[in-house]
Image (cartoon, rainbow, N blue to C red; front, side):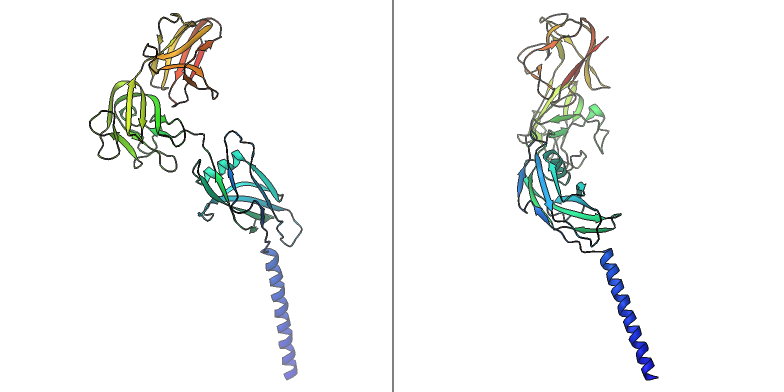
Length: 356
């Protein structure tokens, strides 16, 4: 009897051992280690991105193949995050079934800005690769490397100008508040055109680029001589009219210059002798001439019916926007046209002729 009992114990122990081995094999198959490594670039390598070379390689990644213990196709997903953020909200750059990928400069720049890098400043992004098979329930991660990126921005820095002219009505998003823009990233020489009517202020964006009360804002220092103040300020003020508005948040100065715009030149009814004036359309925030007879010839837009006063738009730059100086040419058929001068987008001024 004792021998039978020992035999039963032995069989039970063997059965348990076999079940344990089987469970371990199943576990190994379901959650394999699949360790693999990024081979290039090396952690600490750097790149400086340039808006003039957007198609150049910004990041060339290679890595060893992950091994899930079964011959199946593996999907590799490239994830990045700002160094120090620990992939709390990773940005997916791309996915591939290869063990290499090249990201061009424009794509990498967009990804770098998306995770919070500051343009024109060298900062680190963490890069890792996620390997998955099947429906994605089996996954493994590579090591993480730090890649130093100098990103760029083609967006001009802007301030919002909320005030009585738009009813102070957008306390949350300021969508209707006009903007003024600096001439380049990191600069503070803001400028733009808008209709003003009474009190207004200057409002900066928050770190995410959004405008809302609670952000830094500026008003007049109280003596209304064109000096800005952040604290104990008064609202700036202007009588109703169309203005060029300038502000410098470093020099703490601002100006509002009333300006009426017109079209002048050989293409217009009055030649170079006098302007045909525009009217401001509050619905579109654009300047319009409802109808004017034009003939082929030179023309330009000028302000306040005078030369050499800083209001002279006669050249289209490489980006398609009006800038000071030069002459434009009307080459359409002679006839009546509606003319639209759009100064509502700061430093991105355009015009349009519509045949009537």
